[in-house]
Image (cartoon, rainbow over all chains, first blue to last red; front, top):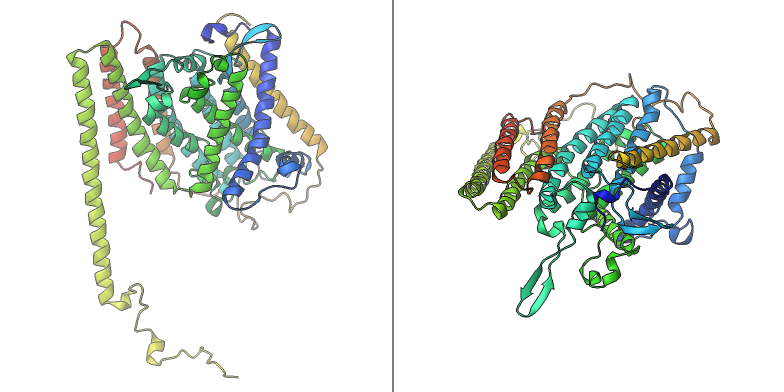
Length: 439
Length: 123
């Protein structure tokens, strides 16, 4: 079981091996992740999906990548050349760095050196991921800005506003995990999810899952929503709302290697948030319950397999959501982020903190705090509920009134009847009208 | 690679590898790809129709309020992280809890004010 002290002792060559392996893993994950997504989604839509390049179309993304690397790259004449070139790099590099703190497994022996299956761990590991996500935002906004195209800049601004809004809710959903784990280090958070209690039903003893996804289910649900928003995936893929913005901030990146880097950053970000959800909420690399009964499950290289299976499942969830849900409207997206997720998160953090405090101190102060949150939350809820109810009723009344006025006066354009006093209803024809069969 | 900053050095190594790989990729791409620009090819794509006027278009900026709010709440979240880590440690507890209640109450007033001023409503 690795802890923070196990890191920072690797010889340089081991670090380089691990870094290169992470790179290769992520690049392959993107290539075959795209294939998996296209194949899964086409099966859900009763079609075959890519099946020409290689067996089952497995080489489709490789072929696409080769094509993008070799075809002519057009840099529109108006663009800001430096930023236009740098923006894809700013997008893709931080996405890869986030993976350095994702734990893949316990301490193993690698070429005779004892080392944890994780590139590095920091006392502020999760903060590093949030920081890298914020850096990625620069890539988005600069790509939109440098393109000198109205759609690109609108898409860039929109995407930025969305990502930063959901990043706050994401950061807040981690706080409950930190309250339970008492650390920001990812390896120690995984270690904290190792020991679960047991539930006794009669003579039956069922081991309870110790995953934070179950213990802190509101945090997990909020995280799931924010991870869709943070990575610009369906149903929150407004930056790519093609009906309104063409392709958003990467409109001017024609299908060149730069575009491939932007796409890669998008998919690596999906894998980063999936890896983070596994680490913080789904028990990390540790085997789930029926497998964990086997003693060898959490030792050696096996955890790599459990991590990979969990990653595939979470990625499958992304694809499933994409196949199932339509895109939300922008105002709905912002309202969900700011009016629902953030306030809910704050109340939930206070509630969790108070319950944690109850375990240490059962004094009257803590109970007062508990009462304050519960009563305060209920009061706020009822206030907004009645306010919304009033607004809904007013609106319904307004519509009803509109109908009544319009029904009485068809001339005002009452729907669905066209105005009944149009000239041709009364035999008055304009001179330009051509009657049928006139010549 | 020892010491407190040892683990941070590794992040820097990964950063260097990342920049190296992708900058190298772009450079190789530059040498491998054909390059035959014409004036038509180099116009801005926009939506497929010939672009009209300048590259910039005026639009209403509604995002700046969200940027302010983001700064407030990002800082708020960063203050919450260390609090959450030391919360269960001995010597903290009730006092720490009350302090965070006061802090979050101020933040909550902020978001309630924004709500009341209707800046959270998309117009």
